[in-house]
Image (cartoon, rainbow over all chains, first blue to last red):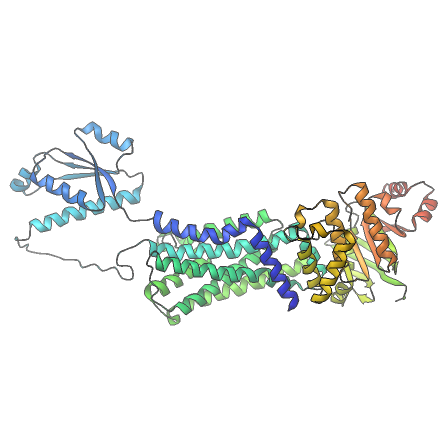
Length: 368
Length: 242
């Protein structure tokens, strides 16, 4: 036991004396969560648009003021001829152009119909789509106000309610994802690098020749990272609760336990990576390519799994991060207990045992 | 096992698939001697040494190190030997004192013992001014001397040195060999691999490995006589060229 404590002490010296790893450990979680929380968002706000009002009457003015007074759009400039449309898009000044046809008011009263053309810059398809939806709903809203007195023969009124995230805040989606990425990165990459470093420096050999047992070496190397990852998870949860008002509907205790399980899962992956790589560089590349990319792309963090092609959906099942994100969302947003997420928990547990078994086997082969 | 022998190997063999890295080598190392283990790169020195220090299982043959069997008692062997490799055995980002404390700790020394030994070591090597410096900032020669002393911290019966003087200047090498002599004089057996032939002259006995086999084993004087040459370098060349 005394040997073990000495070992862990040494490990903390390594971590705290290496600025790079310290930054990855503590700077990155904060930076990432801020970045995803504030900068990267699916919502649109203050989008610059241009308006080409051929009619310039009461109705079009009402509509324009309704659109530009919303927090979504800012009227960047007025356009006065067709040729300008192309050029404002090319200059990248605006994301959309609204064109009101000639004699808009007149046509509306006489023919009961008038057209607004919405042209969007679809180099960014998602934004273009969102803009057109927003404009549409503002127009519809105006129409309903105007038609208040008139009774329609048939009317279907959809009542939409967004459960668990009524304001559709994208930060609610990012927090579980970012937390997963960070725990994966810190736990798997840092441990695999720190173990391969001993191999590279030749100190691993010295440790193996000493009476300290191989499993003690591994546990000693991994232990500090369990501790640091738990602190990291706590920092992320606290930041998201207090800065982004992320709810934790379920039990905080369960959230903690599941996080620890996932941390151990990532650590066992890190150990596995360190058994197959000889240098720190390799360990880092394997962690980045083999863990980070799948976590970002296939875990359902950014791209919904249900809309992926079937082969990718199948691959996504073997990514532990996918299950952890499901668990996090369930606990934080839906507030469910273990009875709803035991299946996901078991999957992560099973994967952890599998990775550990595999690394023990690999480790033995290396020692032969 | 004869009381005078601390290592006895009998037809020790290690195969990797079809490749025989170490081919049935037999030799004995006496207590307190400096035993040189020579051979070109890839001759099987390191593999043979790994079997002796308990981190590689032999394919066949027998070996006893400090009275313990390499198959069944590797843990006991590990407690009784010291090891220093060609790469550095110390942590660059730990101070001299922290390194001493750490290695003393993993060999199970008591805290008071470590403290006392650390002081003795720092005194002996004249490290007062750098004891609190990171090892990474010290010159190569110093690191080696410290690594050697650290490997002796738990008073092992045999110390294994794997090409300990690679890449250092002649003066430091000379000083290093003085430390080796002193250690052997105090009763610790020294098992050293090297490919510097002038260093081979310093050993009490040397064995020369070629393609996994021991081709010669005797004192440097006897070997030179036997091969009728003037230096160990010539002995080695004669053997290596077959």
